Amino acid sequence: MEDSVPNVASVDEETAWLLNSLNVDDKEETPVSEITIQQSARKRVEEWEKWKQESLLKLKSLKQFIATVGGHKLSIAEKADIIAIATSFDEVDEEQIPLEIRTLAQECLESIIPVDEDSIRSEQWRQTISEVLQKHIKPLFLPSQHPSVNLDTGRKTARPAGGPNATHDLYDDQPWKIATSPGGASGGPWNVIRWCINHADPSQFETLWPGLIPPIMTMMDDYQPIFRIRAITTAEALLQKVDEKLLKRTGLNTLFSESLKTALTYSTSSEAPTILKEAAACTHLLIEKMTAPNSKERFDQLCDLIKAAVIGGPWIYAGHKVDVMVASVVILPPLLKALGIGSVRFLKALIPQLSDNLITKPHMKHNHELQLVSADCLVVVIHECKPRIQYWKNRILNGLVRSWIRTKEEGKDDPGASELQQALRALYKALLDTCPSIQQHEMKILQDKVPTMFEELIS
Image 1: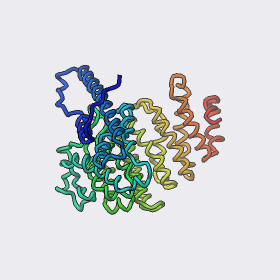
Image 2: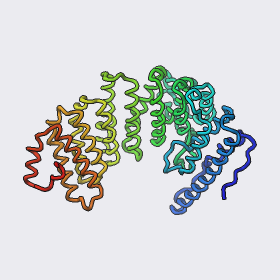
Image 3: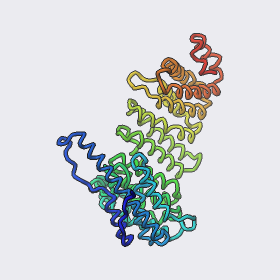
């Protein structure tokens, strides 16, 4: 039997009702010492199921209302209310928000999104997005204004309002840290902002700037890594569409750069792998946006990024954390490809570390993912730094051969051995193409000692 849908007299009443009821009220939590872990877990499951059923009912109601009235007949304010509701469930992790809820939210949005380029560029659509930002987003961030951003223009201020320590005021009152799901797992203003960016025409950004930039910068400089991650993904969506002249004219390129540098230092938190990858990717995009191809400025900034995000950060301070090491290696290939032959300046750091990653350390748990990404990264290093690989061939071959021997010895009991062997064969082929002599010299010596061990590797 389908859920009953309440009658709604007007869209204003409908959206007000939905906005109030789709958010879980903040409740004072009982101290853990007073309840058992089992009771707490059971309560969370019950709360989640209740929220899911209520959200489904209300989104079905909203969808029916839009179909009854007609999406094209809704006013700007009414569309803005619907967008603010539905986008809270849109563009979030499917594991957190059930697919049925996401689908319903997307169907509601599709019924009011312009279908042609002219409509997207229209003043009416710009006003709709502006209404979403000004009515539903701006009030949430008013108590925690970023000291380096002018709230009325979205531009960088000449000096931080309130002095150099004013950033701490950001953390006093933060009503924007709301969520559509219990426990704050998903949903919230970050999704609404990102949706507005993705569905606005690039020509509209300058007028939307005051509604976009203050909340993005407040989230990017938050003390909790999870909100920095959400802000960085939002900033990346903006960078993919905005004109570099607007970034420079408003000073946002400087603000983004400073905030991302701070994000790259989060190498010890539980969110370190994610924030490291997101911050590096966003910084890379910002560099390409703000610098000319093949310029000294771009080269220097890419080198600084490799030092901060990889060699001078995680590889020094988080070498014992496998998940952080994996993230740091994943970052490298696109940066090395961007640097090209300029990557040779880092060979003294790259090849020893990446080659050692192929071998399980005595103090670390065996991790195929780190070995796989390191093998793939070494292939990129070999291709980009071909003229200098001859000098490093034995260092690379040492890690490759030792890793291969382990996979052969433990292959039957190791489910990931086959995939790693494939990656090692690709690495050997890249090394052989660059240094053909290894087949007749180094590998021949090994084959003479262990005739059958390396047949699959060199075939």
